[in-house]
Image (spheres, helix red, strand yellow):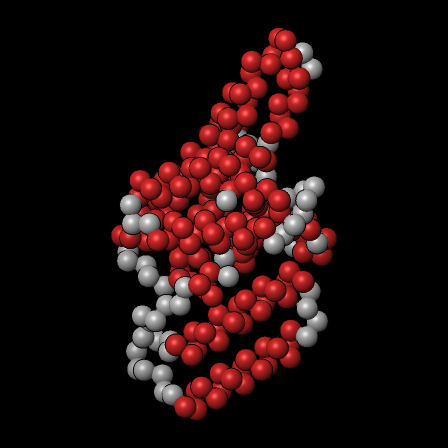
Length: 231
């Protein structure tokens, strides 16, 4: 799954693989209760991502293959393994906090995971001289207009938004019915709105306002039929 994420980067720039890869990974670790399994799955997700993302560093060793060729297996595995160790540790801590504080609402998990992804990128970009390669914020280069926002938020901010937006499809797969402040119909409408905004950002749909108005009218109809419970 991690290897798919590299298709969202240059030279492919197929952005849709970003939400596909991250959503699948999130759904997998969200179902896990064993923290050790979370660590292992996170490690191999990130390892696959970096193996396919930085394989090119071995090209320099091909200049004198007879002399440096033996270093290729180490060059193509050690750096991805180190990056994966960072990522697995971050995911482990994120999952630990979710369990410790009994966070059950999907949107809270998504926000927390996006924050920890941001922390991962800051750490691996600066710790031990850093390795700021293949930051998630680079996936916005598929559209020059979207990439312009990096002048305001920076590449780390763009990474945060890329992770956050890529996880909006999770709202289709996981419906949370435990929040006493939100009835089912309201949550579904909010989830549709979030995913419509995601599609608009991806494909630049022009009629987004009209689509959202239809869902907001539905929201008014629901409000007239049901009363929100008192908090």
